[in-house]
Image (cartoon, rainbow, N blue to C red; front, side):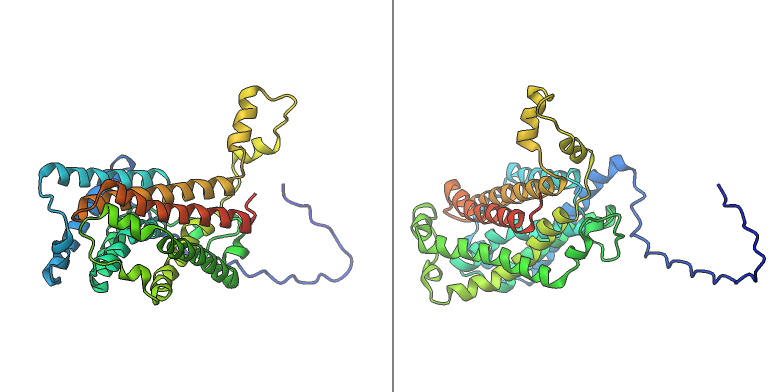
Length: 338
C-alpha cells in the first residue's frame, strides 16, 4: 500500500534520489538441451573427449606405459570401462555437482593411480601429468557446458545464496584449510610408507620396478609436491560447499524435534541423520570421495598394471580413502559445521 503524503507548512527539502544498485554479473547460461537428454549427452561428450585426448597424447608419447600395462583388448573390458565412466558421471550428475566439483573429484580420485605409476614404475612426470590432466578435462568440461556453477563456487554470489560467505572468501582461512588437508594426506602417505606398505607391495605386485622411493630420504619432498594441489582440491570440494550450504526443510524439522512426542522411527532417524545441512553435505561429499578414490584406484591398478593383484590395488586405494575420511573429520571439527 502506498504511503500517504504529509503536508508541511515549512519549506520542502528536495530528496536526493538513491543510485540504483548495480546488477550482479549474470550467471552462466544453462544448456538449452532437454533435461532428460543432458545426462546421455554428458556421457557421450566425456567419453568422446577422453578418447580423443588419449589418442592425441599417444601420438607424442614414448610408449613407456605399454611396458608396465596389462594387455586387455577384449570387448568386455572396453565395455566395462565405458560403463564405469558412465556410472561415475551419472553419480556426479545426480549428486548436483558442478564443473569445479567434478574437476576436483577427478583429480583427487585419479591421483593415487598416477602417483603409484610415477613412484614405483618410474613413469615420467610428464606422462602421468598428461594422463591426470586428460581425466580432469574429460570429466569437467561437459559439466561446464551443461550445468551452471554452484553459488558456493561463485565469487559474485549474493549473501542470500550462500551461508558464511565472508568465511568462505577469507583468504587466510582458505590457506589454513589447504594446509590442514595437505598435512593430513601427507602424513598418512608418509607413515604408510614407513610402516608396512613396501612389504605389502612386494606381496601383491609381482612386476613392481623399484621400492627405492619408499625409503628415499627425499620422500617428504616428493610427497609435498603432490599434496599441495590436494589441499587446494580438498578445500574446493569439501570445505567450500559444506560451509556454504543453506539450511533446508530438514534443518527446521531437526530444530523442532521433541523427543517426548516423537515416535520410535522419528527418534531413530534423528539419531542417525539428525545433522545440519552443512554437516550432511560434508559427510556425503567425504564418503563419495573416499569411496570413489578406493574404487578408482583399485580398478585401474588391477586392470592397468602388469602383475597387480586385486588386493594390491585395494590396499593402495584404502590408504587414500583413510586420508580422505580423516580430512573430512578434521574439517568437520575445525569448521564446527554443526
